Amino acid sequence: LKGNSTLKVTDGWSAYLAAGAIVDGQIYIEHSKNSHVSGRGMLMNGERRVVAMISGSENSGMEGIIVHGHRAQCWNTIIGESRGCSFRNMALITTRYASTDGLDVNLSQDIVVDNVFIRSADDAVAIKALGNHDKKPAECGVNRNLSFSRMQLWNDCNNAFGIGAETRASVYENIKLVDSDVLYSYDDPNFHEKLEERSALNLCALQGTYFKNLLYDNIRVNRCQRLIAMGFRSDFWFGSIPGDQTTPGGIGNVVFRNITSPNATGSSISNDILLYGWHKEGTPDKYIENVTFENVSIMGHLLNNINSPYICTNNTAGLDLVKNVKFINH
Image: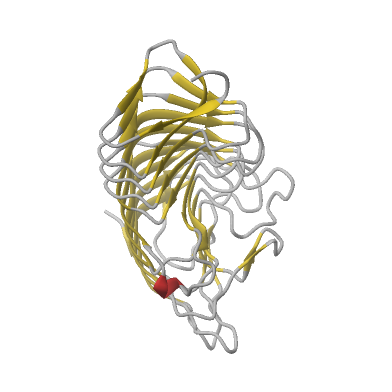
């Protein structure tokens, strides 16, 4: 690349960044099959542009490189509307606040992200469903079969591993985060303790749709504010991103297994778990159900019932929006 420009890797081609190389610009795999980017060099960006992206592609991937976006208000890397693609053995670094997500996955299937370190000033990982604003979620694409393993996540704002907030997909299904570490997760530098849609492990649905078969297994959370949050909202970031809960949806078959969070931060939301379904006159109720907490340890204590002081739901005497929550310890 000469100056700051974009290299597009097309069908069947590969790009290699040699060890010690620092490349100023962007590398995109767009509308391609069997294309790859690899190496041991660094790709960095002086413009307000996504640094590394796989978009509209199949059976393609990036491996080994460091991706450093040092401009504010731009995501660092994206896997969007792709199938059978991967990020492996990479480091993604973006430390300027805000809207500087480390990795965004959008409306994709059969994706593998393995052994990736992310240091971000916003979401470390965000799984989104963007576009198709004139369609109902049921008419849109899907996020399905997304595997994240051996991750090391550090976010200064928002979420370490987030699903949403934009969720205009017909379904989110078969998503797993396993064998990973949340090194540090903070909610917000300006509105600390005030935003319910922030947590280390997060699902924030702005649109009515379905979330099925989610697995979080063998996750070590070194330090966080809120630990887990899942639910449906009418808007995001003080109304700047409006939601639409007029369509049906729900969250079901979620497993949190072998999760440890040994440290307290001293904040009022430290290690909290917030589960909130949806009820509003004129819109379909949306439930969170069949959630299992198996060997989930907070400050050395295993969670054993929904009345734990760490767990909060929006259930009322007349309506259980969060139901069939199980606890298994062995």
